[in-house]
Length: 211
Image 1 (cartoon, helix red, strand yellow):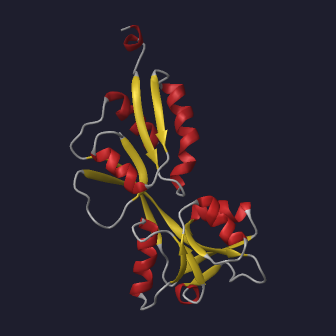
Image 2 (tube, one colour):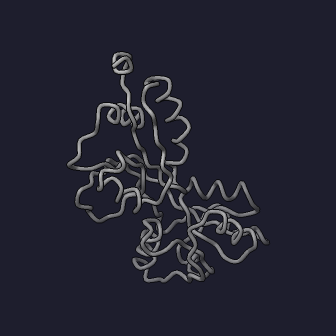
């Protein structure tokens, strides 16, 4: 009762998909919530989009920032936030492709990509199929550490959202090139249940998140 008289209190859970621009929200979100609503206990979960969306559908997660696929998901609503451009990343052995690379040139490279159910992988596969091409996938890896080691050792190139791509290039000797012809973008969205209402503390956190 004392806590309630002092403002909003209670737990709020927010999912942030790893390898996306959502990762950068963790610290400023925590700082803002602590400053405005110190009674709210924020739970941050960094997991893959499929796991986060399932937890939201089951009522075990209030909201999540993740990449949205093209298909409508029953039980969920998605509020568009931004579109993150996809980049190719490869080992800096010799000359890289420059600041841009076409999808056709990328088709000639050995690629290390995420599994087919991954939203970014689906966007890549759709782009290749739309151009009448097929990616030359030599391995499927979702561990950021392993992917970084693969790139650093020149075993193949990969396709990543800009935020993750820039993190890898600053951590190891790698080139970074924006994919063109066509440009591929991954839509980042705020996901929540379409039938379970947010609590008052969760609504307050959502407003901070949107800011």
